Every structure is written in structure tokens, then in C-alpha cells.
Length: 156
Image (cartoon, rainbow, N blue to C red):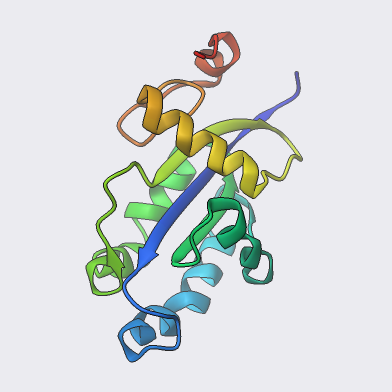
């Protein structure tokens, strides 16, 4: 198998419709966060805003916002998430999003050049919520390696 990269999905349940004034602070920062991700070390790909419309259909909830991206490795994603300007917006998430009872972020390894689909992301989130952190779908709490992912036997 060629090189593997790290895919991530993050879903959030918005507190109001996107055109509601409550969401304005979030909307005002979307382009800034996307530009920051695009220029971050280790960034490879992200789901474009125009491709996010089908997320409501795949996840069967129109109030969910979805973010998917691909990174060279877990360290690159961690640095973007917690060691960049992203953290200032991340700290404000309660202003715009409700607390989710389920795991709302999942990571998994993909072949270099593969663009994960919304269906892939839904499957990984469901797996994580059913089985907890495994090399098939995990969070920042578990730093599974490429080797872990390659040798992992998926649970049914």
C-alpha cells in the first residue's frame, strides 16, 4: 500500500439557521478558518462549502454542519486545531453550536490521493460511537499509528 494520510470529520449541530444573527460570528470567520487550514503545514484537502449541501441528506439532519479534511498526519491536524488561530474560534463554539451527546469528530487513515466521502465520514462516526476509539475511527485521545490501522481487524 502507498502512503497513508489522515482524514478527519467534524460535525456540529447549529443553534439556529445560518441566516440567524446568532450564527453571524461563526459565518464571519468561515473564510478565515478555511484560508488558515489551506495554508497550514500538512494540509492536503478539505470538503468545499458547495459540496456540503448533501451532508443534511447523508446525516439525515439539516441542522448539522460538517467539516472534512485530509492531513499528512495527526500532528499536522493537531497543530492546526490547537496551535493556530483556529483555537480562538474553537473556544467560541458554544456561541453557535449545541453540545452533542455522541462523538462528533473522527479520524481515520486513507490512501494517498483518496478524497473521503460524506458516507465514509458517517460510517466512521457511527463506528466510533459504537466501538469507541479504535484504529478504524479515533479521536485525539488515541494516537493510533498507520501500523495500527493496517493491522486492525474491524469489529462487527
